[in-house]
Length: 55
Image (cartoon, rainbow, N blue to C red):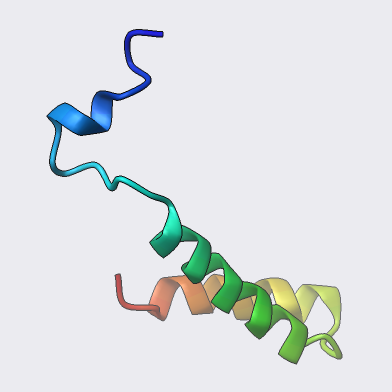
């Protein structure tokens, strides 16, 4: 397991996944808000969501 703590030597790697988990929680919230959409429309919605969402 030599790469288990690789983030310690590289400051560009986040030490936790909190930001990533928060991002996906917001995505899941949007998914729940649009639950009445047909599957095809929901897929298109999220394609646009990820395309237009600032990084």
